Each structure stands twice: as C-alpha cells, then as structure tokens.
Length: 65
Image (cartoon, rainbow, N blue to C red; front, side, top):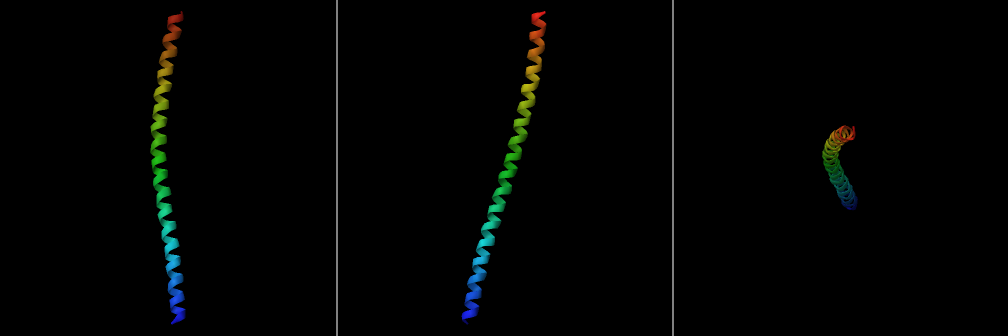
C-alpha cells in the first residue's frame, strides 16, 4: 500500500505543476493578445499623427511662399 500512496502523491504533485504551468500559459497568451490590440491602436494613432504632420507641413510651406 505504501507504493500506491507514494505514487498517488507523486501524481498529485505532477498534476499540480502541470495545472500551474497551463494556467500561466493561458495568462501569457491573454497578455499577448492584449498587447497586440494595443499595438494596433498605437499604430493607428501614429498614422493619424503622420497625416496631420504632412498637412501642417504643406500649409506651412504654402504660408511661407
């Protein structure tokens, strides 16, 4: 009976470790998805600022002529 008990404890420990690793992996994936969305938003903002800068530059050149 002692062997079964030790095996059961080892299996429980292994299961716990696997569960923790799985939970951590899910958290990392979730964080990656959030980061991807934020990066897309930042890219859109940069493009909008780029367009605004081009318009301002064009107006300034026209005003200086």
